[in-house]
Each structure stands twice: as structure tokens, then as C-alpha cells.
Image 1 (tube, helix red, strand yellow):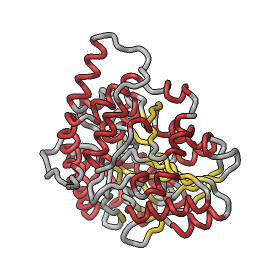
Image 2 (image 1 turned 135 degrees about the horizontal axis):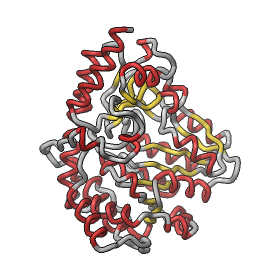
Image 3 (image 1 turned 90 degrees about the vertical axis):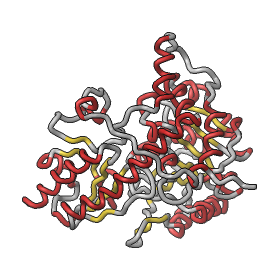
Image 4 (image 1 turned 180 degrees about the vertical axis):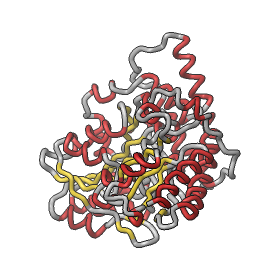
Amino acid sequence: MTVPPLDTLVPETPPLEALPLDALRRRSSTKWQSYPDDVIPMFVAETDFALAEPITAVLHAAIDAGDTGYTPPDPGLRATFAAYAARHWGWTVDPARVRSTGDVMMGVVELLRATIQPGDRVIIAPPVYPPFSMCIPEAGGVVEEVPLIDDGAGWSLDLAGIDAALAGGARAVLLCNPHNPTGTVHSRASLAALADLAHRHGAVVISDEIHAPLVHDGPFTPFLAASDTAAEVGYAVTSASKAYNLAGLKCALMITAADGPSAVLRGLWPEVEWRTGLFGALAGVAAFDEASDAWLAGLKTTLDRNRRLLAELLAEHLPLARYRVPDAGYLAWIDVSAYGWGDDPARRILTDAKVALHHGPLFGAQGIGHVRLNFGCSPDLLRTAIARIGALAAAS
């Protein structure tokens, strides 16, 4: 009998409660130290919740033991992630085909260096996470944009455009799955078709799957599990950092599912794995352990409510804004161009409404007139932020 993944079985659980604002403002992270206290920060991908108790416990134990040395060759990440992938997505991962590094973009850069030649073109699908356009040149590649298709109801990969770019000489596709900033969860059929294109043209696909634990609607298909061909052409890079708020601890996983990519992964310089932070590894093991599943379910309940609440708030305060409830994550992609706040409306919103949002144009030309908003917060803070922006719209 095939056992359905956990994410298709767990009913809604009680929501997580965000920490009080005064406690959050004592944090020393980018989100809370970039702006004065009169600004509501909703720009960077940090969330406002206490850590899962198993993570807190393992970090406290490490501090108490003075356990601050080098990360061991196998801190338990490989087997724990493999169990997590099977439990949540029905995906069989061979722990021997997993290596760690400092963060997802670090892993992407090293995999690109190992699979392309200097000057090779690498396809991205804007609007997309801004560091994609930075890490490709760092690896010696050249960015080639094939934007997502927006059909008015949702976004999808432009497979015909990707086919043309690969036929024209592009050697890799840097995929975001789920997609940041739209929250799109790519279908198994779309991923399998992408794999077929890459195989036909002798290219590789590197899939950033950092938002995968936070899929709300429908099943999540890891790229490597989309088809046998995807396993032959693909690499996945992921981390517990987005879902469990661990970005500062520096730990990500690079995963393969076939002999060819696994040989490339094994061939990376040992220093790539040495960059893994010990606290990141310890926290990652605790995050991916079954003991943290209840916390994750509570987080997803909160985020599910917030993504729907945001739609209601925008309809009330910013009726000209265009927003689609995301399939995954805690990031909202919002078109506010109708309000005439310029190509980069986040600037006006920060200055006049005192809400810090991410700058749409940084995600590509498709982001002109857009903002990205982080709703991984309390409902009350979300209400306050949208009411502030709504007041700006009313006064404009």
C-alpha cells in the first residue's frame, strides 16, 4: 500500500502565535535592525515566531556544553532530511546522495561552477528571487531571462521559451520551486516537461526548494522526483532556514538522485561542505525531525489564515491592488501600480506609510509597480500595515 505524504493528511492544527512586538524589536537580525521602530518591517524573509521547541532545546544544549567547534562530516542531516522528505512528500532520498553547505545560494553557486563553463548562459524565470541574478555571474555564467507566463489566473513556466533558450545555447536552468515571489507550486507535469527539455539539449536544472516545507495548496513535487529524467539532469538545494527561521545559522543541503549528478556533487571541493555552520546543522536536524512536525503544522495554519486575511485587507484598504493568494510560503506578490507610486512603490510606502516592503523591480522588469510583502507575522500587525498603506492610498 502506498502511504500518502503527511502533508495530505494532517488536519488544521491550532495556529502559532507571533511574539509580542516589543520582544521582536529586541532581535538583532536584519528584519528588526534595518529601520527605526516607527517602521513595520515586512521586507526580508524572516518570521515573527518563537523557534520550534526541539530547535531551542538542541541549541541551548550546545551552548551549555560549549559545543561551538567544527561541523562533523555527518551531523545527522542526511538521514533526518531523507526521513522528512519521505514523511511529508512521499519522496525517497538516498542519504548518500546528500551533502551540506552554508546556505542555498552558496550551494547554487558551487553547483553552477561544477556544471557550466565561464560565459555559459543560465536561464531564470522572473519575477524571481533577486540573488538568482547575482549568483549566476559569481559562478561565471550569464543570466538569460525567460519570464513566467501570467495567464491572468496564475503563473507557470514558459516551457516553449525555455526550449528556445536551451536550443540557442543556454546550458542550465535555475529553477525556484516553489517560486519566490509568486508562491507558485510548479506541477509535476511542468517539472517533468522541463526535465525533458534539459535532457534533450544537454543542460542541467538546479532547483531551489527552500520554501517546500510551506506548501499550502496541493502536493509539492520535488524536481528530482518529477520523473526519471529529472533525476538524471537535476540537482536540488534546500534548507530548513525559511520555514523554521534559521537563516543566520548557515546550513543548506544539496541533493541528487542519479549517478551522474551524484558524481558531480561528490567532486565538489571539501571546503564547500566545511562552510556548514555547526549550529545550523544541529538546528536543521531538529527541524527536520518528526518532533518538530506539530510546530510546522501550527505555522502553516497561521500562514494559511494570514494569506487569506491579506486578500480581505487589500480589498478593504487597497481595492485597486492585484494579489493572488500564494500556493506556498509567507511572501505576497502585490501589484500596486494603479496607485501611481512609481516603478518602485516600496520607496513611497516606506517614506509615507512607514511600512518596509521588498522592492518589486529587484525581482526583474516584471516587478515594476509591485511590492513583496512578508505576512509571517501576527494578524494584528498585518492589519496595521495594510491600514497604513491604505491611508496613503486614500491621501494620494
